[in-house]
Amino acid sequence: MDASQHRFYQRMNASGHGSNANTPLAGPSKNKQFVRNQHLSAMLERHDALIGQAKRTQFRRDPVAAIAPYLSVVLAFAMGGLAAIIALFVRFQLAGEVTSPLSPDVELTLDIVFAIAIAFMLREVVSLSAVKRMGAQFAGILLAIVTMHNVVHAMPEPFERLFSPAWVSNVQTTTDAGTLQFRGHSYHL
Image (cartoon, rainbow, N blue to C red; front, side, top):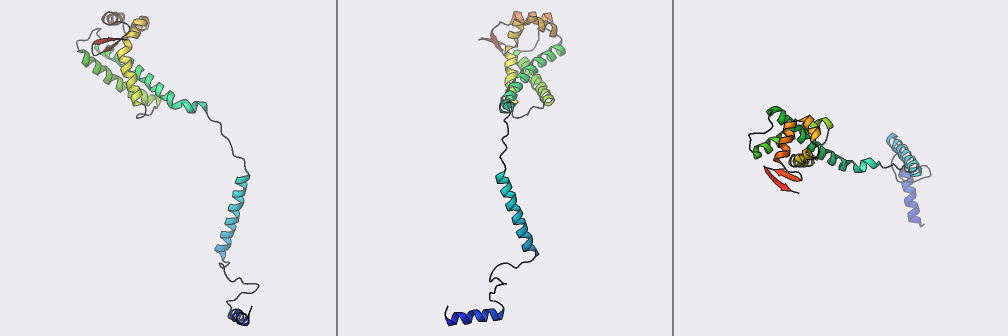
């Protein structure tokens, strides 16, 4: 260190801006906020160290949770079919007749409207998501309406108890087994 630098440091120390053993040249003042922040920083470092040492917990995957979305679609489809059967039953009970004087298009429309209304009620009872599963419910409704006569052909006794023997005999005489019944027309499977 040359003489000019030595004199500069002496002047700095004399003015109170220089460094001595007790006062650092730079850094924040040691007020209450600084001490609090240092304390919080030390706490966070200890916390991070503890978290780093802790073992990661491995949660078991629920096997049902993985297939729940698919089960809800199947449930919505089945609910649509059930709603169609209930709609046919309600329409039969309201009309009280075995044969209907309405055209096949009007009958199909009435069955679908009743089934959709009943599906909304069933969906509220089961708390099924309305928008996500509506397509599956509607598909179940349509499939049940166009194929229900096949079930009547296969199992006439339960339908005789549910509807009436005259209704079952009318369905069996007016439709063929193994077909799709849509708007008054039969399509063989």
